Image 1 (tube, rainbow over the protein chains, first blue to last red):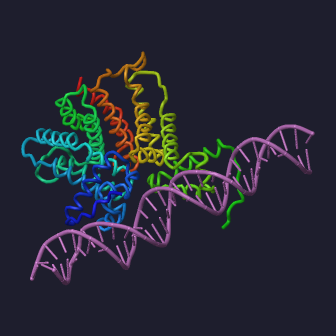
Image 2: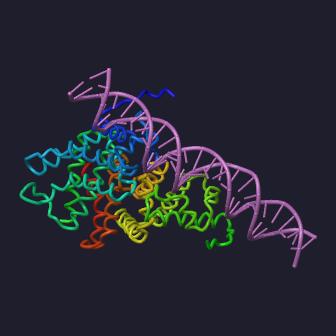
Image 3: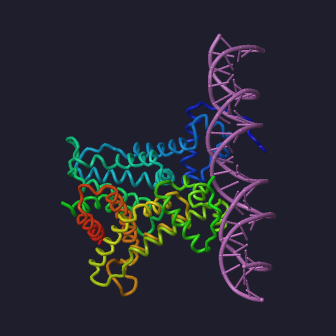
Length: 197
Length: 197
DNA sequence: GCCGGATATTGAATATCCGTCAATAGTGGT
DNA sequence: ACCACTATTGACGGATATTCAATATCCGGC
């Protein structure tokens, strides 16, 4: 067909392009609907080039998910100093903003992780715990929660709750104000933890 | 090899066998790792027969997920009459028991839904809302919650919370007593809703 | 018992996608 | 303008999805 002559790019920007495209496509398709063929076609390259950059389909998927996870961690980890409650609120605000602004990328992360592959799932888990780990009293920092099996269980489940809230609101903001969502996100953790203390 | 001569079954029981097998296999594999070839081999039939019963791979996946969802709805919907709080507790107890006993099947449902396909995802969503829908004051029944966008958002996210709690505890019950888990499951909803009332 | 039609089941043929590799063509330096 | 380096291609081989005409099995009537 109208095959563009051939575009030669630097490895880094080519890699960047492919990862970006993968994240974008993964938000509207499921993992197994995202074929190498379609990706190559969409990127305007041959299939072979994709295998040059990423060993195989699975490795490419893993790279895409890691990409989305890194974006999330980077953009939502403001090491706010201040009162624990304020830091939690600021953290959730950054999280909510990210999910709203980067809806597609976050869906890629969630959907990719869902595909069940252990390695990919662990990327997702680590990204999510990066958002909550500082809530425990590891060193001297923001002392909020005791580190017990029960609170671990609660906090992990709470992050599932927060994710659902953020995703649902990002998709359908009608009828609920942003302030209300923030109040839910920041208030839910103390409310839940107080159940078992 | 030792190909069994050929077994002829009634359509309904054959269908049943294939769906059961699909649900079982899906608990150890992810969706795209569950090939038609393996399924046919495991069931002792030809690939062609699978296409006779389910049009294609995707439709088969959909049927398997729907199967798992129906199991869940059926086994956890005891129309308990009594106080709202008691009904909620009984409901969550049934839910927790189901997840623990039917760990594999429930994982099939979650993982299947995770694969991202819209139709399959909606099956999962409907199953989950079937567990919570009776909490709203639709007719005269268990009047607990007002039906507003905010509470809808909260309840939906709460079911994600409950799912995470149940799955995590089913996988790793160490350190947390069953009673405690039940208290969390049943107590979390009122605690969350009180945030916005 | 045994035939004969209905249909559950098969197996081979085709299409589509993954993954490989030697050949090709931009690009930057001299 | 050439050359070396390497990003990129296109054609090939294998695996898996999907189709369909042919076959084997069951069940009712005689």
